[in-house]
Length: 152
Image (cartoon, rainbow, N blue to C red; front, side):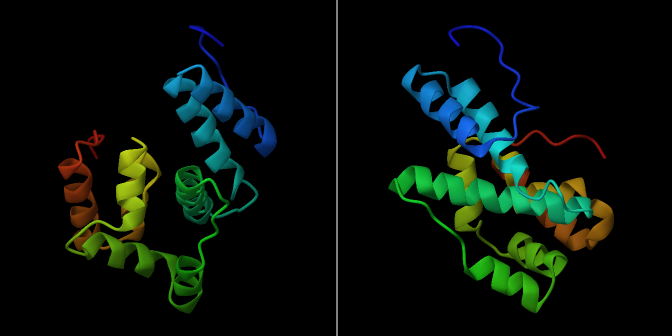
């Protein structure tokens, strides 16, 4: 692992990805840790047909994994899924983006330098699904946290 480029994009086994993460941490290879973390997040939602819903499943996995890493215990989110079923994914993400302060999820992903896995990043990625106000708020938050936005 030391010093070489590793491609995990075709690895879908969660346990193997967690092993990569653990070994990368031991070897102080944060680049490999982040690659394995991102791929682990991609394992959720990969069977979903709707791209936004699929990506959102990855966002949820990212937060659960970050919280589990922090506490050392598995963490499953309860509140967001209930909210999503009551309203809609688009409305839920819009509400998060329009809040004056970033969510705990956003701050946790910022701490892990993985803001591209946030709900705000999804809004910017799927701008056509959201109101201009939600897109502007998401862009503003991402910019405030020095996230490089692609020109749209």
